[in-house]
Amino acid sequence: MAGAANYYFGGYVGSPVRLTDVGAYGPNSVSYYGTNDQGGNVMEWTDAISAYDSMRIPRGGSWNDNLGYFLRSTSRDYYVPLNGYSDYTGFRIASVYVFSPIEIWLQSKGFPFDTDIKSDHNNDGVNILMAYALNLDPNLNLSGEMPRPVNTPDHDSLSFYAAASGVTYTVETSTDLQHWTTEGVSLSDLKANSITATVKRDGANRFMRLVVSK
Ligand SMILES: [Ca+2]
Ligand SMILES: [Ca+2]
Image (cartoon, rainbow, N blue to C red):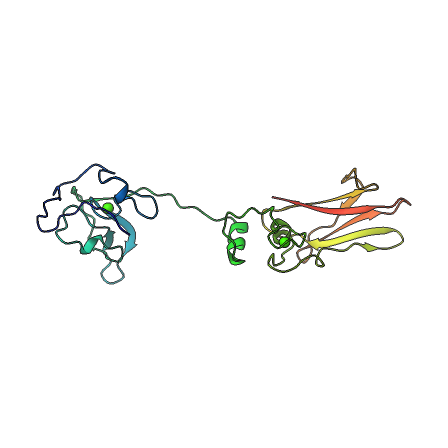
């Protein structure tokens, strides 16, 4: 990480030897994560506690460090917070992003968490959301793995995995592949992570489809 930081190196002529405004060192002081003055200026408290002596760990070095050592991202200092203040120790406000179940699943399958789940990266006709909904591996060819209807003289039925977190499963029926309805489709309770959708036979040709949404 090339750049500039506010620290005091043995009286180096370029050091202000005091606190500077955030961003005073310009774009060169912006870290890989887009944060200003990560190294130098003020040293920031972290939520880490030293296992060795239970002291709290600040990192990043400050304007008051007369060596560059504490600027290193691998370096840490040890202090006990007291009821006092200094102009070389501060903190940074950050928010924690909590991954949703599907975002965790995406990463477990080798995808970035923000992948477009409507995409079909391997062109097998099954998008990523459908693979997630049916508990299948999106990296495999799933063209032959979709739920298949079972036909009896009285009913047509479709059973499928229906326990993916955050997914709504709907089964629709149609006689012409144009107009789809959930009317006449009965759904079983979830049993062994599966649901069975059943349509009564009435003499017409019937199609069934599974719709998943998030
Ligand atoms: Ca800093
Ligand atoms: Ca696919």
